[in-house]
Structures are given as structure tokens and as C-alpha cells.
Image 1 (spheres, one colour):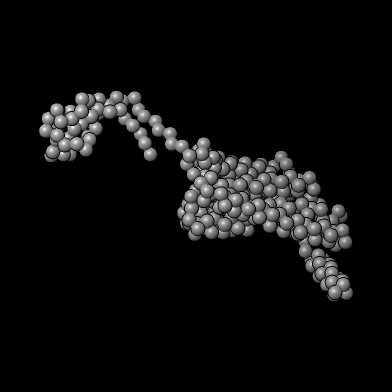
Image 2: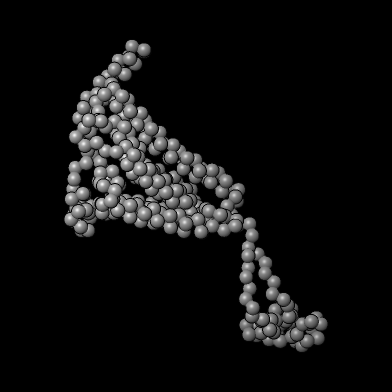
Length: 304
């Protein structure tokens, strides 16, 4: 068994070494690439910052809207759902995590930055790679947070899928703007920046291969950890909901300032004149009755 494991490890290392020789990393087609490849005082860098601010603002407003739906009894407005909808909620979380590419791309960029050749044709600043990756990861985390609250508040199957797709569209605004820049919709300078080949030349040393191996492990760990945490949170909600944990525990009624005069309440006692009724009652025919009934003046009482 040990010999077979050793042979397998040797085989994996040979495969990684062969792959590594031809595996330079091309920066993604995204405005975040401008933060790495373009000068700080340039229109592409400014466009990348504006795009990030736009995307973050959209997700922040979406999250704020979801949090505002809560009440004192149900702060997060967790919906009462059927089993079918609950199953779709779990699927929505899994699909949303798989669709998010900002967090894994950001982690991969950091790993590739550590792998790049020091004496390559074009060396990218590690601090700018790290800065761009952190912005990517922050967008991804905001997306996943919005996704969780949107899913737990929806009680309709199609609405869950529509909301997941809408959040994914907001998260991919940077890709849309980058494509518009590539087609020259904004300026010639942005078109040139978007059509450049930005490639990180990776080193073929043993340390670089070790970094790549651990980078892939970290990405897989983050993927499954996020999915596990979100599904665990939804599982806790599923467990507590049948006990009325998120149900309504109080009712607040607000009455206007209008005074309702002559508020006569119809009783169940028929009558022919006032003598057939109690002292505080009168006998007359109501609007909806042909037979006279005893009527009593009462205060407005609310009950449930």
C-alpha cells in the first residue's frame, strides 16, 4: 500500500511538472485586471474603481432592502415554506455558491502572483495583485451574504431562481463593462487597455509548483466551507421553524383618530319594543335584518 501511494505521488508530481511548464496564467477579462495592469493615474484604473463602487453599492442596497423586511418578532423575515420550497432553497444556495467566481478567482490570482517569474518579460506588482484580489473577494462575500438572506425570505420556487440570477447579474457588472471597453464604447484608451494580453508568466521551480498545489487546495476548501456554512445555517432554520421560532408572537393594531358615534351592535335577541331588551339596549330593525333585534352600544373591541 505504501509503495502504491509513493508511486501515485510521484506520478502526480510528474503530471504537475508537465502541466506547469505550459501553464502561464492569463488575467481574467474583467475591470479588476485594470487595477493590476494599468497605471494608477489612468482612465482604465479609474474605470475599475468606479465599476467596483457601482457593484458594491448595488449589492449593499439589495442587502439593506432584505434586512429592512424584518420585524421585532422575525428580524430577518424568514419565510414559512413548504418542503418543496425548502429543497429549492438548498439548491439555490448550492447553485449560487457554484456560480460565484469572484472569491476563487481572487484566491487564484494571489497564488499566481506568488508563482510568477521574477525575471519574466512582464512582472506584475504583488501588492496590486493582492489589492485587486481583495476587492474581488469582498464582492464575492457581499454576493453570498445577499444570496443567503434572499433565499431564506422567499416562499416561491421561481422567485428563488429569479433572485439568484439577478444577484449573479449584479456581481458580473465588471465583466459587462470590460466587454464594452473592449468594443470601444467608452474611449480609445479603454479599448486599448481591454484588448491587451496580460499574462502572468509562472515559474517552473519546485516552490512554484508547491504554491500552486496549496492554492488549489485552499480554493477547494473555501468553496466547500462556504457551501457548508450556508447550508448549515439553512438547516438550523429548517429545524427551528416547526416550533414557531420565526412565527408571529404579537399583533400591533393602530386605530385612527375618528370617533364612531352610534356604534350599535346587533345582539341575538329578537324584540318587538324596547321593553324586551336590557336597560342599555334598544329595539329596532337593522339595515340587514327584516326582524327587529335588540341593539347595544359598545366600545370597539379587538380580538384574535
